[in-house]
Image (cartoon, rainbow, N blue to C red; front, side, top):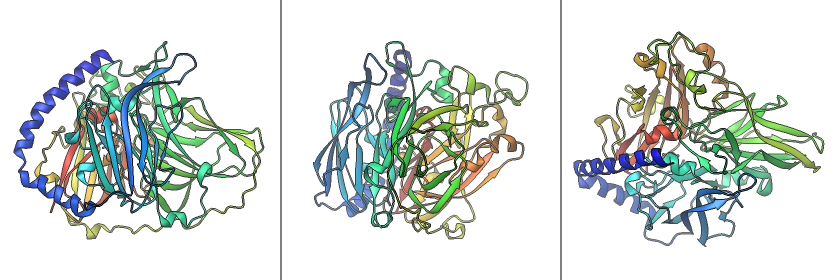
Length: 533
Ligand code: C2O
Ligand code: CU
Ligand code: CU
């Protein structure tokens, strides 16, 4: 980590300097309003659930032989129902937190890392002070508490650091964990539960010959996004899932820094999707493949009935194109000829490039088991937002994604700790029309896919529009987007404009939006919305 780490440390210091200036630029009452509002919701009362989370360096066995030095969240249930905190044995992944809608939660965070850290609850709608904004990061040896009520519906959410310029590396060295929320609507469905409901976190990592994690090796790993050469599931390589011949609920999180997956079953069986980032779909959707970008989740109904004991089926990522920079496609920095297929930079320095074919896990049938379960036709209710109800129905807020001189930007801007521009101020309790536009034609050769994420409430995708000239690559991914469910992260392809509808209710304060390619996030492809009463 040495050279790259040093660079980001220096940048962090610079940024903190700038940050102080920026804080002074924002009137104090804005922050006061945020705190007021969160207190309204949290009250002074005791939490139903209290969890201790410690981040610290440790070692875990990953490959055979020497253990691997990692950073890990470990959890401890201080108060609340048994089973709320469940460790994943021998993994660098943090514990799985099982919460229920309506619960009042307090997380006590203890930072035993040698550097600052902060925890973000990805996908949950919580008060700003509990949301893990980098301005709330704490130093080494310090503690802080996050208090929130679980407002969100049943679904798979997750927690990870959001430390200024250090998110990617901290997550890479292991800091991440799942939050599984349940609610009454979900409990009433006959979906597979307990050991038949399996969370699976997909990540890529690289190791040196001493079994130690290797992170950024070249500058292009940073601006393109880090790609590891091994796929891990729940922190393990060559992952095998022993199964009975029955129905399972498989819940995938793409916890990778920048790798995008195109999920297929090796025998060509379609995938039955029952949920997305923000929980259950209205009704199941059958897909030949599913795209899963960093930060996204997908919930599958996986029916292994009729298979034989001993049979194996592999979940793979299969071939797609168009997500990496097409250096040389008119205006590329190296002045190459047109159309390097697959994206020149997808290949450079990565021994397992984006968009190639490789296995993720093997499902092995180990025993027979009867199961009469029927796939529910109706899973949940989703109230569709209507564009005409948006407070800015006539004037969507456009967020232009760009990559100039190796620095990814949002509307030409970089992250400033507490600053917001005029167009980033959002009135509380409004529905907003937003569009992510990935059409920086002046730097066309640098265009790449960006998984765009917004903190706060889940949103709905209204439409996707593709600029002419991108059809052929787009056809390799476009059937894999799950735009009918609640989303907090959406993949925006080169040439694409994705329009979404999102509400900003309950809490005032600073809420981040950023690219969930974590190297891009750390390169400041992130901004604040200020939600203001
Ligand atoms: Cu999962 Cu702001 O991030
Ligand atoms: Cu988030
Ligand atoms: Cu990006």
